[in-house]
Length: 338
View 1 (cartoon, rainbow, N blue to C red):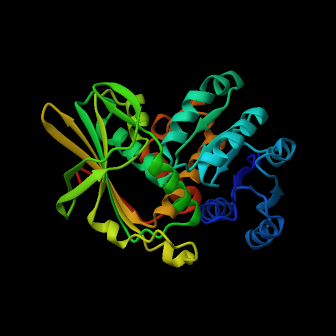
View 2 (view 1 turned 90 degrees about the vertical axis):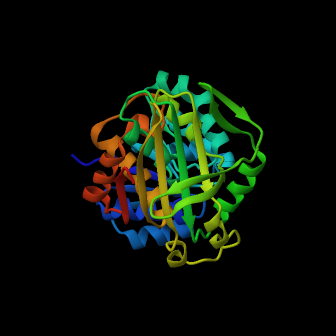
């Protein structure tokens, strides 16, 4: 039986292309969604018979319904998500189509849980925001290291080199810098105004490194599946000198040069345990994770109805296996205790 198509909205953007290419390469039917018919037609012709272009603007409810007709999952790759998440989640709910996005804007992730969980449960739909490099990898690693048991604290730390931002990433970063973000301390989730704390964190093969607080959604996501009173998210400052905030015209090869290490550390009774993921091309990793989650939703059914986080629905190892067998794996290395 032929699987239901997966719709990728923002299919001609950088991350959308990566997700759609992975799906087509895995011989999964894909609907290419967006507003530029000419660009969608050209991309569909390159992908071949697995791809079908459909156009609809965010404000066009009938058009979005036609775009989603017959689809099993909508993958939203169109940022900034402060503009796209609400209309596309609502379109998916109206069409009773599961929804996955690559949102790296923590306030939008909070809003997805607050606004759409009840309706998604009522309609029997899974909504999974932030199945992206940022937030999802940290959330999935926290599940890996905590192993389902209670811990005293969870810390997630990012080392990112050579990040060349897309125009959508830069727009999102500008929004995030001004927005409140989730924090989790003393067993309480709060949405607080931006603040900056400096500390140090020991990265594998690098040792103690200066870090600053990073506005992640992990303080919202991790306590949903790990019993802990505290979640902190850090970003290493040293490699930030290699970032390019004005790289809208960078080619895909230049964007693929990013390198990363993400560590999740869980502390129990003063003893720290770790899992880490190292690799290259943060955009490719996020696109493959989102595509793999969408394929798993169509192949194995929904892990749960309602709004759920990445690690509530999947284990990191199972998603990596799905990438290897269905889509082609990005270059990453998972280490326990790393």
